[in-house]
Length: 132
Length: 134
Image (cartoon, rainbow over all chains, first blue to last red; front, side, top):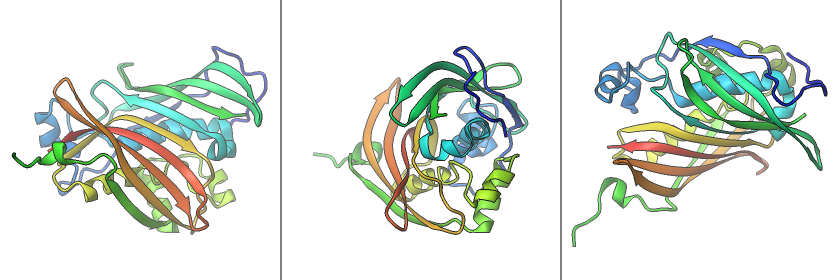
């Protein structure tokens, strides 16, 4: 796990996290956007990997950086954009420091976060923050 | 006057849940494997779950409360982490529809969720906006 140091500066990126997107396709799923046929009819490339799974890739990157403090002080807000992700997409989570603010409980780091695929298309964008 | 159905009939304030969940070894392992969580040592050492483990349950609660909903696609997702979820503990999630709107021909549903432990302490607060399809 990366240890947070006080030397992080605005404009710096925290360590990225890359994963090959995967979610088992269940033909009996209640949410049929996670099946190939329906998703293609909806204009997607195939069965969409779940939003909570995509979010977890970003959360893991943030947890790796902030450690247990994330569980007490972590905040995140994201939008899902583009065509989402399908199994086999190579996804990389990014976090770029955009502000460092003092709060009563400590110094809060604010980051732009995003998840991009193998074509560098962003599929999730938003903001996250945590007390250091 | 015709009766409202589907999206139009969903009342703001509709309660979802509560959903009770025990964070046992199998549940935690299944989630860690599903999301390919790599660095498991700190989580295991502290006997906690990875952050966000229960977020996938929000969609389940929505499907249980809205039988006419066929598809839910995440549009926005906001979360505030307040306390770790202890492995082996029991948690309760309560959800509520707080808004709905139609934009560019698509229906959107906004829901709030609060996850508490057995002592009633709030662990996670969430607001999610999803595309609603029947």
